[in-house]
Every structure is written in C-alpha cells, then in structure tokens.
Length: 334
Image (tube, rainbow, N blue to C red; front, top):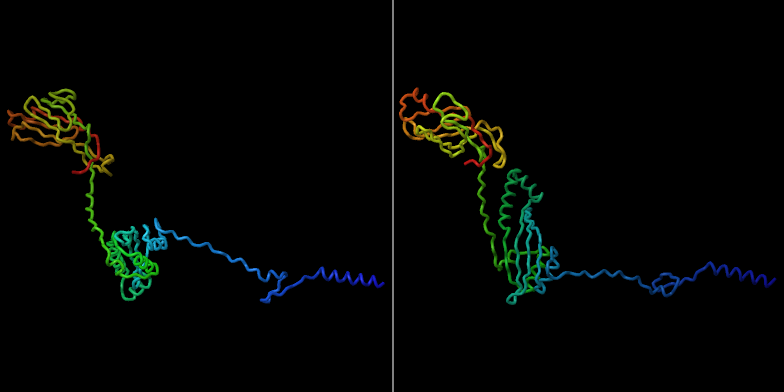
C-alpha cells in the first residue's frame, strides 16, 4: 500500500511538471524563458547611406550641384525657383554651370531660359477691393510678363572661391538670396528682339495659263468661213498676225472674267468667259495701236489707209474671234 501511494504521488508530480514552465526575471523586470534572452537586443534597421552624385549632368538635383561646387567639379543643372514679392510671384528657370578652375577661381555660369509672372489670390483680392477691374488686372499681368520676358536670355559669368560659391548655393537652397550675389559677375543682356515684318498677304487670282490660245480668222468679205479667209488659225499670247492690207494684230493677253482662287496652287472656281485683249496697228485714224477686248463670236472691223468712211471700212477687213480658249490657273496678283 505504501508503494502504491508513493507511485501515485510521483505520478501527480510528473503531471504537474509536464504542464509547467520555468520563468526568469531580467534586471529590467522583463520575464523571459531563458536568461540569455535578457541581453538580446533587437537588430537595429540600418538605413542605406544616401549617395550624392558629384558633378556631371545633375539634371535638377541641387545637392549634386552643391557637392560639385565644393571642389569646383564641372557640372550643370536646370533649376526653377519662385519668389513671392507682395503677392507678385516670379518663377524663373535657369541653366547653371560650374565650368572648372581658372586662374585659381571657380568659374560659375548662369543663363535664364524662362521667366513668368503670376498673381496670388490674396493679391488679386486686395486689388479688386481697391477698385481694380478684371481688365486692368489682365493688362497689369500682361505688362509684368512682358518685362519678365525681357530677361530671358540674360547671362552671367562669375569667378568665386569654392567656399564663396558653395556658401551662395547653400543660401539659395535655403531660400536666402541677395541682389548682390551676382553683382560682381560679367553680365550679358539678351539681344533685343527685332519684330518681324508682317508677311504680305498673297492674293491669288484666276488667269490663263500655258497652252491658252485664240482661234481667229481675218476676212475681206462679209462671209466668215471657219478655216477660210485671208488668214485663219490659232494665236498664242504674244503672237502677231499681219493682213495683206497693212494691219498687224497682236494677242496681248487672255483675261479671265470673274472667278476665285483659294490658293495659287488651286484651280479657279466660278470663272466666267475668257476675253482676248488685242491691239491692232495700221488703222486709218492715227496709226497708233488700238486696243480691243473680244470674246468668242465677236467680229472687229478694220480700215486700211485708203478707206475714208465707216461704210467703206466695214466692206473691207474684219477680224473674227471663233474661240478664246483658256487653260485656267491661279496666279499671284501683281
């Protein structure tokens, strides 16, 4: 019996031990399972060290440019910055360059490539309260931007010690600048823009192009026969025809009546009948060239030197226009 009781007590102890765990208290009061855990430190997260590019094309990275200034390493940067002066906001974009050492000094170059002005809402509100109209504000903004545009192309070239240049750039980064920063620099103002003369408006008009001709005949009788008569044929502009009676007929030009042209490369639209401008010499009255305008179907009567009356003239020589054929084109108006 005693052995049985001893075994039972032993079993109870074993069960109690199986369900229990040993606990340790660390110096800082934390309870842990193992004493070694008291001194385990959480692994600190190590942030990667930021690598700053030095020199070369810094793009828009001002830190890269400042780092290059410390050793006067050649570098370039495009930087846009704004200045708010009583609500008038000027935003300029500059190309900045470090061009290396020269004569013991670091050469710095800067060129303004863009400059514009805007008004803050507070400025506009105060202006409106002061009685300014929207039109006046618009005019003021346009005038301000016109002045700002005059600075586009402004260039400066400076010589600094590396310490001076670095300090100036650090100030700019912090938003601190002075009008004296670049006062000692060589400055080059942009060339004044020469206003372009407005292009002359080109007016295109219908005309008779190459291949145009006048179909005509010269006759001594009332009977007009196509293909017959004293002379019959096609005459181009510039051609001169002589009759047997001392008349000379010259086709000066073929005129297009009416019509429009969209451009000088287009075809005329809504053009009317073509007219031939003809000059004739050898007439009775003066001997000077006489000008006629004739369309298809017109007949012009001429007198030779021995005719004295209109009736005698009409019985003599006539010029008949069978057709005025025009190859229509558009040309620049003279």
